[in-house]
Length: 190
Length: 190
DNA sequence: TTAATTACTTACTAATAAGTAAGTTTTTAG
DNA sequence: CTAAAAACTTACTTATTAGTAAGTAATTAA
Image (cartoon, rainbow over all chains, first blue to last red; front, side, top):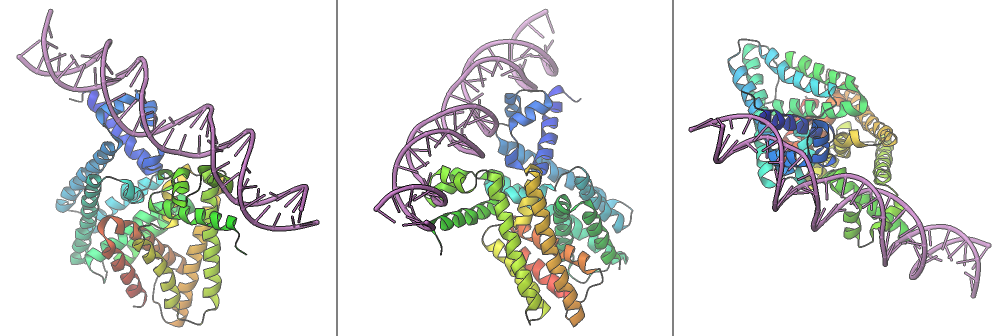
């Protein structure tokens, strides 16, 4: 039962995330959102009183998305490589849609965010790192993956490759992201 | 012969870079700069007519800094590891001064930058990547470094580790950056 | 020493920002 | 069908933004 309200709220949330990832938190306004959605400024404030509330909801929705992915991945009877590629493909989509990852976007704005928002961001980051860490462990156990560092450290290395990879792709081109993505997998699979 | 002008202009440039790296391009104003330096708003506009001019000058100064480092490194009779660590220490300093790297900061704001500025950014990025690439090649030749990918790809991987590493450190703490930094060196030196 | 150039300040503007109070329309539940 | 709750719009306010025009002070060069 999708009410009109939920549609509008959801649309604001999606557009907000898009803008944060495309131009950054401080480079768009509620007026931009209102204009694009054909609603009035105050309607955005109705759903998200302050810009920080919008930000927080975006982080929340990412937390719930990655939680869901984590649950699905835990049980899925597929190779660890396929599981990892599911996360990789999310990053490739970012490159294609002119975005950077939420975590990278947030890191840039981090010093201007309220404390409450910050702690949710920490949750999100740890969630993603853990997800990759577990997949790496699974792959090693399987004999699919080879790496010498700890799974946690390897997760840090891979996620920083991906996160900065999409950022770099903005500047030097999409090909560099593909290069990075493929060489991570190559190194991992020996 | 450091005139008063050069002092002011240089101070604006340094503070501008600090702010871009700390809070991002759209989260500070000329008024912020003026206030901190004890000058008037219009004085900032005198030296850098538009905010984009300031941005461009900051990129320019980074280009000249890295060009200088490149020249020094090319001739220095020190191990490749020491040369690489010089770049690494720049990134460690960022973490300690609550900044992210210029390239990462710029990547976040990239879509809002004018074309002229963008092309300078490309120059800067390629410069840094090339610098690391050459150092990696030298280290491999020396027998100091071990890596299987091409030097260019290895440079991409290391620079994305560092760039996103300082960003991650904002969120999950400084220790994660140290972990990343040390494991890059460990993997490289076998 | 004086004329010109450089480095500013004062005093604005026009645009846009986030946010709110009060009223209106729409939806939903009984 | 109706009342009340939800989802808006209209119409503001206050603050801040980037930027400029015109004037003044300081430095430099002839």
